[in-house]
Length: 391
Image (cartoon, rainbow, N blue to C red):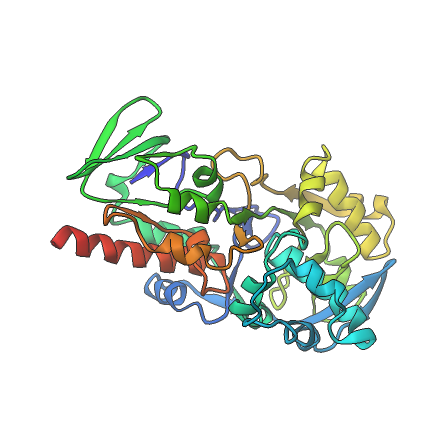
């Protein structure tokens, strides 16, 4: 197993801050929906999960208002998506047609913010058809859990049997197919040979051929370039007191669809002094490239809760975030289908010449969570390789 970074786990990264009381997730945080592959592994590892509970609020100029059955409200918009529609278009074009009319004006605004945040997507680029074919995305979002010991605990469990086979700091530059085998070359020119290879690199490495495949596979390139890498700015703020409890009981999410950070969440029902700010799509890029993410997060947190900035600054213990967009080993958060690209994940999942197989969330079209997608596609690719090797 060749890993370019100095750790395994990809976009799972758990930090331990004593002041937080619980693990701090800088990458993946939730187990969405049933997630059968993830759940089975968590059970094997004896790792406990806790459901995300509590009430949903909306913030307008610092005033919080209960959102009631938010997921039902969003579903009223997504119910208008047509999976059988022949011509694809962007989700923004879908919204511009005002599905549901005037009565769903607020719901459409929330839906745009949800798609921007949940998929890390630009609403003018993400495929309407891909969203329609995937089904109502709120089903996975509304049923979510957290790993009490942190997601990295699952990675630690999974890697224990193969730790001696993992080579860190090895960046693959080229994959060559011959009649009989596959040859992989790293940044130092070292060569590795095998009968088959599974590539799990993030989408941008396939799109711009950072990992070159020779001879070139046009079908693979076309499919990869029909997908778009999403962007997320995900900030954890550890505070001295849970000040949000003064604004409402059992707060889980506070939505601010018109702000750069479109949603904030607590870890309720766990009473921890950690609040998370989340921005997706173009807003995430603007924040990350603005020069001072921490300052932006504090300003937005104060605005959303109608609190003076100096008050928030006085109770902040620490702020944690990871710049996935500018990390050279990732270059983004996770992928989504661009206009006309709804079938691209299935193409990437098919394998090429019985020697090159792809895995990772970009190759999955049936999961409501990126960790589940990565694990499920990894299992699928591994089974295909075993079949190939046994021939």
